[in-house]
Image 1 (cartoon, rainbow, N blue to C red):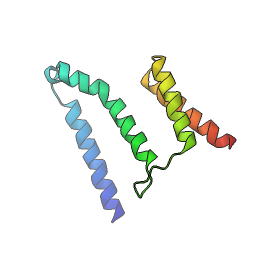
Image 2: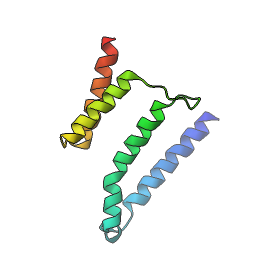
Image 3: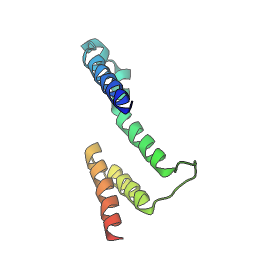
Length: 101
C-alpha cells in the first residue's frame, strides 16, 4: 500500500513540474508571478523551520542547535548572502554544534 502512495506522489510531483514548465512566457513575465517566485523559497524555509520547532503534541520543542542554526541563517541574511549560502550556513552550524555536544 505504501508503494501506491509513493507512485501517486511521484506522478503528482512530475505533473506539477510539467505544468510549471509548460506555462507560456507571457505568464511567467508578469510582475506578480515574478514576485511570488522570488518569495516562495523563503516562505517554504520558514514553514519547514516552524514545523521543526513543534513536536507531535503541538508543544514548542526548543532545540538549541536548531535555534543556533536559525540565528546563523539570520546573520547570513543580514549580510545579504544568497539563499543557498544561508541554507548551508544554517545546516553547517547546526551540524557542528550537534557533533560537538
